[in-house]
Length: 404
Image (tube, rainbow, N blue to C red; front, side, top):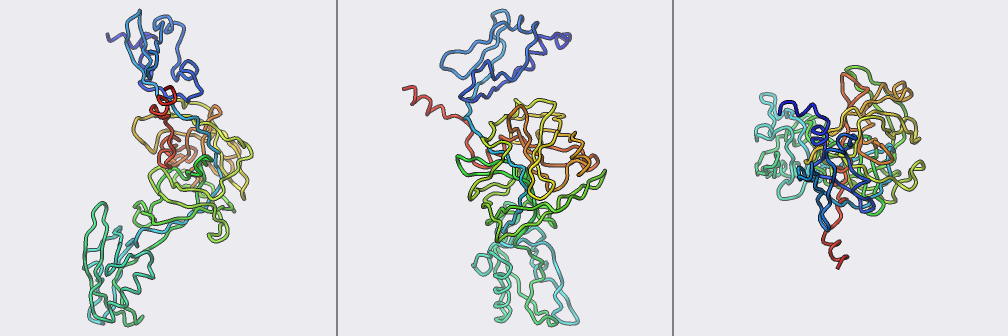
């Protein structure tokens, strides 16, 4: 038994997937994700598909040895992105990002918020029963409570826990303002890259990773958000230990293209007002699922100057398909000389650049290796589609009804 891995048929047996996903326009034969040598084909002489079932049985000398579940997928076409986009997020509540002392008098300086055990990373959801949707709203409540010498009753979210606490504002005589000794933030902005647009639903996906607050490093819980067109003005080239960066400009008022409804581990998602155009792929591209990704050449789409969409060569160094959602499913290496010359590899702002292989969109660039900016991680497209709310599986119930 120890010698079995040395034989090609056994190796081919191990390479047979436990699940195979095919679009409704594909046959099982044309979509098999595993390769078979002549020797292996002789050993595994028959792949038996039972009528009206979703299973493939692999036999050896007439004995069933392994089963592959077949799942039918919708024929989804996506418009690949690559466009640079500006992002603005309005937080849910106001986010605590620090403490400061209030000079109530010369003898004592305190932070009422810190005394009330409000911590960095906490979200203030309500003040005196009113929803806190901006820093201005919190300031008005604090000022009113201070004038009336009454405490502010706060609803606070910490992780998954929500609790009540109260604090009494202190007067900062220098500024002649009542303060609670907390630094807070109610919005965040930045740039990234569009990954895909799904014309049938109007939904999109971008970035491929979560947007976190720059001070707390925690994911930003959003109330609402806006995505806008962006114009790349310059590139700061990356080097070992120093990530590079795209620099861009955008107008939140004039360049809006859609909404942001979700900020998750797999990117930002929402709906576009009018869709996007990709002149290189005007009819869009089909989806390539994780088990269809091959180690070897691929392409990415991104913008390095203005709004000019360009395609560059990369290599899929490693593919790590998983049954459960993962944000780092591929290792991608930049091989295009022009892109390496201009950026040094993967730079900040390139996150979300779609990865294309064998005429299919397979994922997006998400992270750069700090010690090797030529390489980084990519996320499989299926997990971004799931987060966007795009249904990728063909309904078996509908198929049965259609057959009836």
